[in-house]
Image (cartoon, protein in one colour):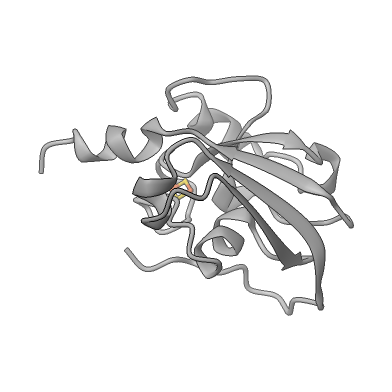
Length: 132
Ligand code: FES
């Protein structure tokens, strides 16, 4: 599925984002659990991950029509955009819902960071189990 990138111009990559992967093999093909990357304001977390080789599932192409890009924002919730009503409705369908659950394709970076994002292991598995 094509990934919808955030539309506006991005500034320099000066926002530190740390991704913690519960299943790094599945997402990156490596055993590396923690990834420190730099992102730009205006990017959404999903595109930051994918740009850096962290293949968070995004079944709907980042248009807020699935919940496969579900992540936990462990630090820096104030540094990303507030959830819209559409995101709130959609994220409720994600397994393992927590207070800090967000859809990574809907979280645009607004602040200076740092931001810490945990990617649950079952996101991809849930998708694989859906029959075609
Ligand atoms: S990729 Fe579908 S809601 Fe984020």
